[in-house]
Image (tube, rainbow, N blue to C red; front, top):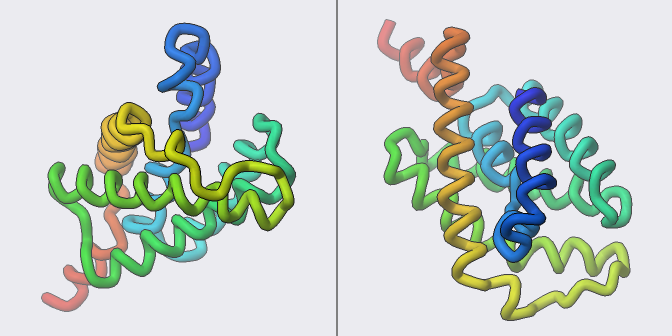
Length: 168
């Protein structure tokens, strides 16, 4: 998981010069946090959240703690959503990532304002349709890659384990 994140971070930073308006603002970890909240046990998800959010903070110029809190919000939100709605099909994953992507554009400036960073809390540039489309499509691809990695390593999602225990 961490290797995949580092590879995507490398693609994002080198691709910034090719398409800065899209790849420069792509939220790499959002799909990871949605995936961890939906498919991982609580302790494992929290551990992965902390490590990856801290690595993301170290590579950014934001105040320390902004991305840790921001991604914790989305990890917990995805966790709560998974109790009522388990995204397993391609379309449900795509819709979930799109909705949380729209929400993320409003939450990030709000979290940043807690740190007095000077980001605009509500700006129309945060809701740029190309950015939302990029976050949704690339996030969907990341989610499917993570799902495939779990399948290759024979790791079952927590909902699938809970459902199979109820059958026996």
